[in-house]
Length: 231
Image 1 (cartoon, rainbow, N blue to C red):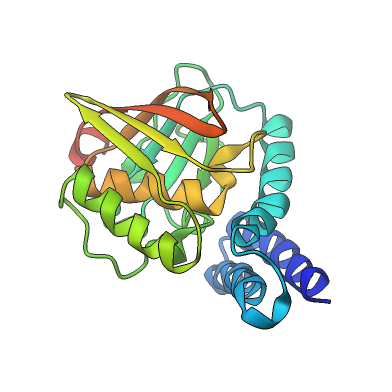
Image 2: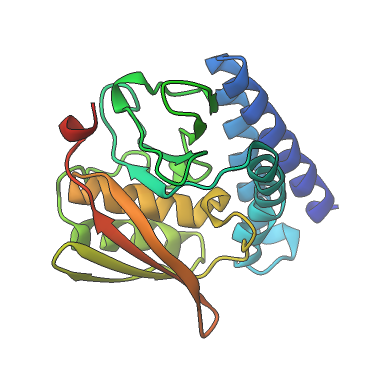
């Protein structure tokens, strides 16, 4: 019963979140996100007889498949841009352009809208699926290391493994547990980690490489300058 209820809530939340974004209906977006979070909580309650790690798995199973199909239909081929919070996107976001050489225009992106046809065609996740996990964290401009520790503390309270983050110059190497392989940016944990790191850095981060190492998803991120550079 618990698995069924949680699955229904997360699936419903994903659909509402996407439709709300497509219709620029913030109320529907918030309702969808709320359903997703309730689904997470339902799976983590003691009476549901589920291991805590499944909390992340159940959310990913619905949002990952949904956005994987959407990304395929839209034909996303561009580099992934992780955006820190700023005026237009107060919760930050993840933007993936259609073109391999596409770049986001942060002055033209707005929270709650998912698909863009111009000025740069692409898909925007804002808020990201896991934004509630980092809501309230005071990490903007705090540094990558501090942001990584802060989000790890939150994930630990949910019984989820935190990320392993290594910073060297302009590069940030991240190892994170994620069941979502088709479209990992839709994973609640990974999306929260990425936005938290961008917030800590106070810069846009680009995903240069992504792969799997010993059961971990490995991402190589690169600092790409502050928000003002991309307006």
